[in-house]
Amino acid sequence: MLPLGFLAVFFVWPVVAILRLGLGEGGVLTVLASPETWRLVAFTVGQAAASTAVALVAGLPVAFLLARTSLPGLGFVRVVILVPFVLPTVVVGLAFRTLLPDGGAFAIVLANSFFNVAVVARTVAGLWSHLDRRAPDAARSLGASPLRAFTSVTLPALAPAIGSAAAVVFLFCATSFGVVLILGGSRLRTLETEIYLRTVELLDLSGAAALSLLQLAAVVAALSVGAVARRRRESALRLRAPASVARRPSGGEWVVVGVALAVVGSLMLPIVVLVSRSLAGGLAGYRALGSTGYAGSLQVSGVDAALNSVRAATDATFLAVTLGALASVVLVSLSRSRVRRGFVETMDTALMLPLGVSAVTVGFGYLITLNLLPGDLRTSPVLVPLAQALVVTPLVIRLLLPVLRSIDSRLRQAAASLGASPLRVWREVDVPLAGRSLLTAIAFGYVVALGEFGATSFLARPDTATLPVAIARLLSRPGELNNQMAYAACTLLILVTIAAVAIVESVRVPGRAAVGEF
Image 1: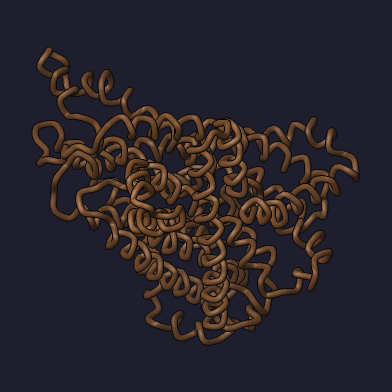
Image 2 (image 1 turned 180 degrees about the horizontal axis):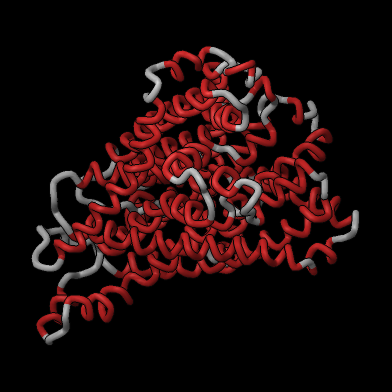
């Protein structure tokens, strides 16, 4: 009841309230019938599809490198590809604006795919590492070329993982906010940024409600496709025992390795450029973080904003990991019982919905509903951590749930037959086996909460701004000092992200691919 109760109070209620308010004003049908609305839909879907395609093309060679080769430096590769996935969107937006000052659709597609190469690489590598090499080798012995052996044997076997990764990447790209806001400006808008514009600047609640309904329909469709692909992937993993398939590349495999290393180098480029830019004026930007910027652009100093981020992220991570762990345990327990499979999948999909619904819709819903709760949470410092936990909880579930499902039920049965209570079975069997994934979820959740921008930009007061919100405000104000502060703050977030990713990789079992979604 705890995860569902949290979802009902802090997600369903605010979203339904804002939709009801918007629908009550009328004009929704007018918005839905407008050609401008469908141009927004077309651009949203188009850039998400293009970003997904680029991420798939770039991620598959990296998946091969991680799953099928035995080369020095693969740990470094895992860190490099994972860092972009958990970088704050405002940092990525600024990095690509530095590389491509004019922004535009091309920059948005590159930035969104930059985020999601890790999703493709790690999800596909998790299944690829279980595939037996003898199948493609048999095809080669029968005269098939390497390309035909891949397309006829390996690619169909990887289809569940590719489909699961593509659905998740499409969802992330379709709901991208910070990247589109920084690189698209006022020229290019998606449903997410248009909802923000109509809600915050135009107060057009009926228009925002109509667009939110369209976005919600697209999110549910993407989550449904992802659930089907994820189920096929988990079934494939259960059917295949882990195989020792990594070896030194040979022949044409070196070409794939070269492409993968080129992708890894490309992922490093925006980060290196941004860090270099932060040092272009010496340490002036870093020293200025103790101030409020040029002409008092901020109401808090950069250091205070960083402390606000740390406090909010800590609270959000604790709440998200608690709720995510409980939800994962419940879903695993229900799947083992006689509860209908459709109910378990519906509950799983419902818990993923916060990933795809506009953060602005949720944030504005908070402002018109949470005053009805004791203490009026709208003015409480817990408001931002609550919104961040709502975003982080689905990621925690996706990291823990596959691991808990993969634990051999015979281990539990053996413990129970020796007299262990259900609670002791969880403590002695499940927790030790899932402990590494729990630590991974904590590190992942912390950096995602630390860099959350969508809901936080709407809910944080000027005197409680977090570091990503402060960066966005510095970029919107004139003055070279503000730019230097923004670059310096972005570099600090990058360093924290790299440290968290290094922790994630340090607890990974050597020689074993990731079991969780990411």
